[in-house]
Image (cartoon, rainbow, N blue to C red; front, side):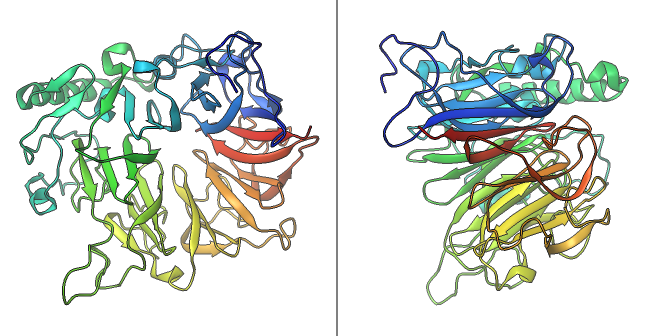
Length: 480
């Protein structure tokens, strides 16, 4: 494929693979003049004006009211927002009905991308990380490199969710680099205080007014996040207002909002504007067995992290040995620890100690994971049937989904929207369940489902799935 020379835009056919297709369904207001939900699978046309014979490569879900995907030439494609969408319109690059490339510095080739409520983060093929959107989600401080100094972060034990504490920790001598230059500690502090003031003012406004947002609260231009010499990022995950990044060495970094422990610092610090290493597994030391930093003496199998996921206010990671750790908000049992407590540090799920987990996904209040044998485990909030258990009761421990439609099929990939869930099986079948007000289940109606229901797909083979907050994207291949 030639991504530089001119050519007809659209999908590309090769001997190795068929035609790459992307389908969408759910709520993406900019794709129709009536701003109506899309109840069934609808093809997304790759823009014809793109040069070099570019085509779809992967889907990334998207945020609230906009979608994201990646092209074969490494372009981050966004669409679905409207000019009255406020936050999503700014963050998605003001792209509506037609997918368009989101411009990144130096025409960086994108490998992975993720979106929170109103912020985005992407990884280039060179392992560089760019982020933009809500200013409180864009790092502006120094790196936190010394975990022993994390105690300096001010602890908030009052439980007051409305206040915002912006913490600046000067633990590393060198400044934190952005594309606009190095931000000084004083400038970072002033910026943080300004954001805190704005947040307090915004939270006092009616929902209809505060939800519209404006560029005053955003960093619309992507900022390069430099985590340190030699640190190479391989993938990212975005929560409601926090971000995780995974390095090629299996190390996890995090920043953003951390009021419920979703940044794994062991505190309820409201805002961390400095990326920090999350202590998931303690490195082996002489004379000591490797064990979890935070799991009350329980050893965590594995030597590094291989997969990460962010929910609304909670996080999850999988080690290279298939161990699952969760941290953050636990009100609905979404951390799977058998209770509704917040987990302020990464905590091993002892209930899955005999199970190897290979895939993880997190929604606003719930979590899904897939074990090596292809079984789906669900836990957390279940108000709309998003767990797929057949009822609406929350589950504080992982529960295996057992339903007739799945039979002996093995799940391969799971994805969660705010309150809906989707899985893709090894043999290319798609199942969805949960909240369906906007047709995000792709079943042709707006009726919620509390058990997995098969999504009808004809003429193509599903390759990957990714949920946005209120929509779903499918990457498929049409045989030649």
